[in-house]
Length: 276
Image (tube, rainbow, N blue to C red; front, side, top):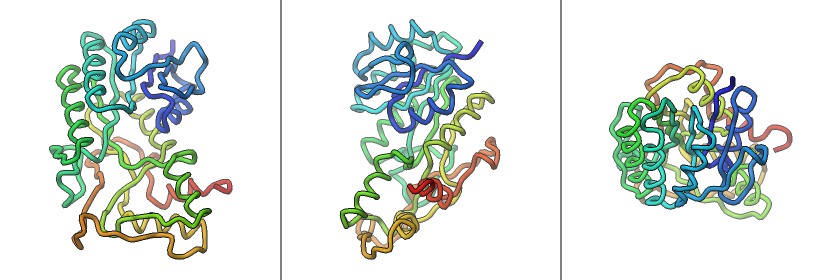
């Protein structure tokens, strides 16, 4: 019998990729806010982040073995939502996979960070994600698996669409020349999470491109393959300083096979496939 997976936020970029990747081996259900998913009608549920009673009803109906949270929404409401989610599954065997972010380290941009580093955030977003990570760990202990990710790209991602529109409209794109980042692909992230789930791996994961480069360099490489137009990029200094800052995730784990790793050039090549 297939394991049941509930994807919270299944209509988003990551959620859609997860549906495509997991539906063959798992019994997949999902929630959406306003836009329907590709799941059958009886396997998707409209849910807003403040609807805690509806969350209970949905989880009771499905009784999932695995819950993946890639929800978006107002921070305080999300905290309440995930606290309720933790309580619902506190005394069960259900595993929760929680998507977090590079922003949990945006209070220390002097280096890239590994999984064992203690998060320190300056932004409200980063602080909220740290609170959510810690709260879920407190309630669920090792049954919550934290997946921290950088900027996610996909063929139908908003950031990729904006780049193509900017080229068509000769609109300048602002980039930082001194902010070192890594990036990731929606489809590869979904494959990595599938491997993590199937092998019941625990703890915190930093998933992203193996290499890092400045935001400016990444956009240069991407745009040079799309157009011969010059001067589309406007270079800025992060924090108006000439220092190099690192908004990137490193990993000290070696769980994933090399076939599930990528570099920034692989992300760009994938986006450019099939006439982009």
